[in-house]
Length: 599
Image (tube, rainbow, N blue to C red; front, top):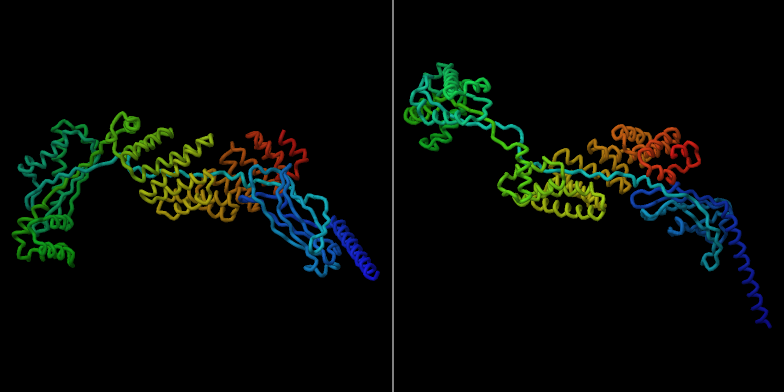
């Protein structure tokens, strides 16, 4: 009986404890209606690839009972879809003063964003339990925040296309033909032997060929010996004599009318050792030691006359200098600058088309001309065919880069996603081949563009950074910074985005993304100014007006919100549909002004 009595007593005590536990848990759940759960941000926002938020939880005084736990489990619910986010616990042993103070806890939670996740609710369930959680009591499910704001997903993809220089100069170029006429010592009379010699015959042949000539320069020279240095006008006189001779020969060949279209420039090159230094360098009779000695005198101290006097004292002066070297300096050098013959743009375009279609040989155009032909058409398929031909002809980095650039451009314009993916893969392979041939900022920025359009952000960032670090032009580096800024926004790095975009160009996408980065960084006044700037530059783009409306909503400016939203809807009905469920406008959904803007 004693045993029975004892067993009965234990059973009664256990029943009493269970009753107390049950009562305590019920009290905790009942008091949970006064708990404070604050979610930041609210509504929930998408940044980068996730939805992250902080929950601050505060329990009422005396709610958390001794030897008990109160857990808060959270979920994101969208229709029948439910994403479990985990739980956080208030453990009574961590809050010994729960009878007199309010237990508080702050937790960070997040979940991955997918495009199929739509507007829903962040909900919570409170659960009271004993320490070993063998006995529990839960609240009903209750909402604590709404979602989702997806404004960050409106970033515009920015791709910069960089074509490498083809190396062809399509401008007028002048090429020189040089004729030297020689004079006797101390004289400026053109000898009969010169007028019948090879140089005169070359001049006559050149004149009769009727080259398009822009300028004829005649530069008279003299040798340094004393008798000539006394006559400072000798060099000028020689240049004038040759000018007259050239004009006479042109008239002889009945080209009188062309004389007045040519600019004649005559001058004398007086007391100048440079022509002599050039003759010394190519002379075959002077020994290396003699050449060095002469050049040392020329480079040494003293004026022109003093140096000539030093040269006169050399033991080989009469034989090798006066009789051999100096006669080559008594000249009038005639430079005839004619227009370099070139094919017209129309001829180059036609031949390039025939080359790409296999109708004529690759050798019909030079590599530079063929590369230039690619710039003469705006039809991307024609560009691609030309650069494919250039690869066959030149097989260099320029050809591969420019073909890859065309593929990126074609992908940008392609609406079919499968074809777009195929083009981007071809671009990546071709551009990687260009880099194997030679590293270049152009190929790296084009690769970055291909990757960002493919949605491969890490690779886009790597390639853009390589383009910035390259020795490419400022335009290429600015384009790469625009790509970096776009990737930054997609990664949720808005401060970095603003830094990178500030180093980019003034393109429309950069203007738009800069304003968006300011909005997402919550610098609303800067964002407002940015979208005003963008709207002025792109007045037909509904996205600019829509995000101006979002910015106005953040600034509590209902008038600006409705006027911009009305314009956005007028330009694109899709933005009107978006606004009707966009949590950015949640506070205005019941506003008549808002409703009227969407009519």
